[in-house]
Amino acid sequence: MQSLRKLYKIGHGPSSSHTMGPGFASEYVKNKYIDATHYKVTLYNSLALTGKGHLTDAIIIKTLSPKPVEILFNIDINRHPNYLVFDIYQDDALLDSISVRSIGGGDILYDKEENDIKHVYQEQSFDEIKLYCQTHELSLFDYVLKNESDILPFLTDIWTQMKETVQTGLKTEGLLPGDLKVVRKAKTLIDRAKANESDSQQQNRLVSAYAFAASEENGAGGVIVTAPTCGASGVLPALLYYLYKHKGIKEDKIIESIGIAGIIGNVIKHNATISGAVGGCQAEVGSACSMAAAAMAYIEDLSLDEIEYAAEIAMEHHLGLTCDPIDGYVQIPCIERNAVAAIRAINAASLAGFLTDTRKISFDMIVHTMYQTGLDMHPKYKETAEAGMAFFYKNKK
Ligand code: SF4
Image (tube, rainbow, N blue to C red):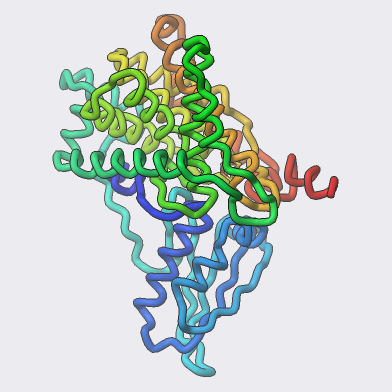
């Protein structure tokens, strides 16, 4: 498995696979061919169907500017769901064609260029990690440090950005970009959290407000942390911000918990997918919920088994979740879904704390189940904006 630095990325929303990944690929092309005069970029499949709402064309044109770019949209089911081809020209001559797969979380793979993949964790699954920790009497965070001894400053930066994203979202009002005219609601939610509500009501309200804040920032193209993706970037920060602000959890512990969540995200990314175009929203928000549940279990000093169980419960109850963003914007259902998942992560950690002895499903098993479910899912339910709510919304207009 790769470094946690490859999982958590600070960058602009709204989509890691549709905005960040194509942006990184455009930078690579721009730097490699400095004599290019113009480009033709073809977006395939999910990138073609939801690329406009996810600002794929906009980030490519912006990155390659001031040179002209022609963007084409195409469907070819024999290619990767997020596939793009850069044709690079110098006057009338085609200098090269570079093909790229955007595989989720901002990661990209080139078909013919060298890919930057370095495995710093030798264990391949959660079972292997657990065995290693038990054999060497390590906590899960010790395991992170054993493999990445210099990771703490990076995790601290990630936490700093998560706080900033939530805080910015909480004080920003108005409409999100795009035709849907979605009203930002984080500030309203936080203003309405009343002192005389019951603890659970207030917890739900506050966690939701923080999730809306981070996800609205993402929907607006603001700066976020992929956790593990842009679309799901509100879940983990919402939960951690709540625990920090209202439950007195120290920042050191929160920063360590981001490492724990990272291991969970890494196991999913390594053995399955974190891309909505490959596995549906279970792979994005489901993964984020697993990460947040594990972080919460760690903060509550639950055992390694209980941390695993929390992550498993969180994923199990997202199985089959489709990706059907209305009009291709990472807004509906995405923003609200982040809030629901953040609350669900609390429930998962709570259940894990008293039911772990009875469990029959391992985290690895649920990761494989999620992946197979995603592969079996009809392509139109995987980030095409052609099915589910996106279909019915479009046809009601
Ligand atoms: S529905 Fe889920 S997977 Fe699809 S764009 Fe929204 S957050 Fe991402």
